[in-house]
Amino acid sequence: MIIGIGTDIVQIARIKDVLDRRGHFFAERILCPAELAIFDNKKQPEAYLAKRYAAKEAASKALGMGIGTISWKDIEVSNDSAGAPLLTFTGAAHARMVEMGASKVLVSLSDERDFVVAFVTLSCD
Image (tube, rainbow, N blue to C red; front, side, top):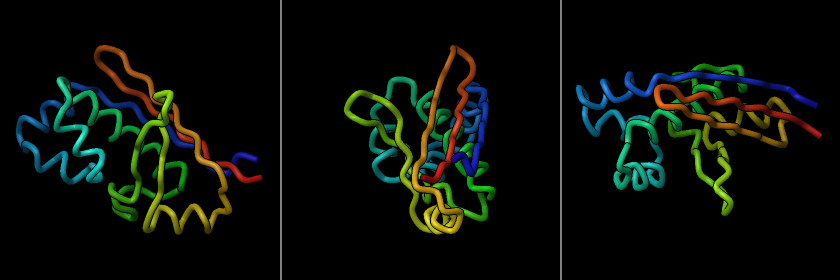
């Protein structure tokens, strides 16, 4: 049964503008250490960061909480061996997931030249 859904869309140019103004500090604020290591080696880091930003925003909406109530770093985006995105919740995000009774997290990420969209579903058995 679905118990939470969230979606977010991000304009990649907007993330690039923030990176240009605030530099690496912005990425450090949003990304977990493993994500940051990948970000640092990307040819288009703004697209990578935009995907993570959208996924984390969508996840916070699925949890029924906003970023601020939970930390950006309470949600980590990784990929399985086939390249499919995965979400891992820690801290307040994990506590909220348990409180909701969620046992499964699904995330879908898609991007075009200018935009990234993320969709997150939380479900229970």
